[in-house]
Amino acid sequence: MAKITFITSSNEKITVAATEGSVMELAVNNNVQGIDGDCGGVCSCATCHVFVAPEDVDKVGVASEIETDMLELADDANEYSRLCCQIPVTDAIDNVVFTVAK
Amino acid sequence: MFSLITKTLRMAKCKFADAFKEEREKSGIGKMDDQGDPVVMLLNHKDVRKAAHNYKVFSSEAVPGRIVVPSEVNIRTTRQIPFEVDPPMHKEYRSLLEAWFKRPLQDTYEEKLTTIISTVLDDVLSKDKVDVVSDLALVIQSRALTLLLNVPFDKSVKWISWGTHVFRSEGEALDGDKAAILYNYIDEEIDNAIANPADNLYSTLLAAEVNGKKLTKEEVKGVLILTFAGGRDTVINALTNMMSYFSANKKALDYIRSKPEIIKTAVEEFIRYFSPLTHMGRVVTEDTTVCEHAVKADSRISLCWASANRDEKVFENPDEVILERKVNPHVGFGFSHHNCLGATHARQIMRITLKLLAEKVSDITVLEAEENIENLGEFTRKVGYNSLKATFKKR
Image 1 (cartoon, rainbow over the protein chains, first blue to last red):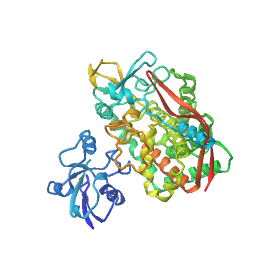
Image 2 (image 1 turned 45 degrees about the vertical axis):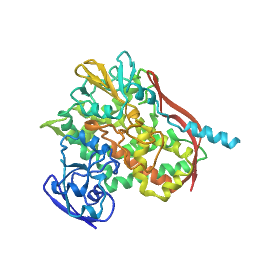
Image 3 (image 1 turned 60 degrees about the vertical axis):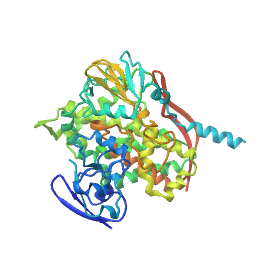
Image 4 (image 1 turned 180 degrees about the horizontal axis):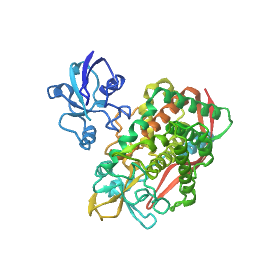
């Protein structure tokens, strides 16, 4: 079981828990504002952009080449950007904080 | 032996080849003429995405109709909105429309769409033989559009009667008389909405403001032309082509029925593989290069979604339909600022149709196919079917 916190652009903090699926699915299922996941999680739409808290980067891991290419063209992307459809929910990311991109 | 031959023919009829492979690997670009206004087609996934993102050099805000291939400059003066507007103004229009075009995610919308599609499939299953284009895809597309506009269901009768040809060009030049049928219809409907406001897209747009100013009738018309035309052939092709896939892949319906959780990835894969819109143009604003090829200011390029979606540098086994493809950065709905406004609606149509097909239908067999082939300069590409006669068997 992993406990995950989302911070939305209106500064709302939402903490939810899950054991499986992707971080995007978790966000969509809990109506986290700003995470749309239009393409269902295949890394095609970039509507699940989040910033990983700097102290959590090691836990979450790095983006694949395809995801990096996608993020390269997202306007507000930085070194902490990830598309959260590509982050599986596992015990490894327990207590991680994601800030939703605008 | 006979059954093997018929099976081979059936497979061939249902195949969608990659028309751009050779040129994509060799030069990365293609060239075509279009009514005297030539187009340099970008074929690589990376180049297509970069150019789509770079609106300053590759603009959508040219003379109305010029970014469409074949060009519509001779048949249309109304600017399609937000499609033919660059940022930052593009974002103003887009933000205004976003909520309305996300309505397909609402439960009530989904329920109504399910009823529409279910009724059409039941009707198809009651017949010995159907034309998938006119009896299934055109009907679902037209009836579903009543939900997107939030207008009475009866309106779809007229849209169905237009057939596919009001929107579809035959040959290179477009037919102005056919286009006028749609434009005049939209003018009338806007006037009706002014006289009798209702909770529909026409009235919502007429009441809307951008930068403190009400939208003009011309702007409202621009959004509606886009909504009608952008989602017509594309949705019809996506639905029809999906049916042809099940004729060539007899076990796929059972497989999806046993694993309905793959419906979302399957739909994205169909969109990638079929790429219902082959390409979209941009007008170059300064002398530059694309894929090491010089292009001049005021010339045209196109972003070839269909080629990018088969790019072997991005997709493993690009010519295979892999229903469970997990990482699928396709550009079937375009890319960046101008990605498809109707994608939420289109995805819902495809997902619900696939779900109901797997539940209701045990077999689809194509009997006759008349392919819809696009001529794009040095390339010819099958984008769908003009007609697809098939039998549907009840589960």
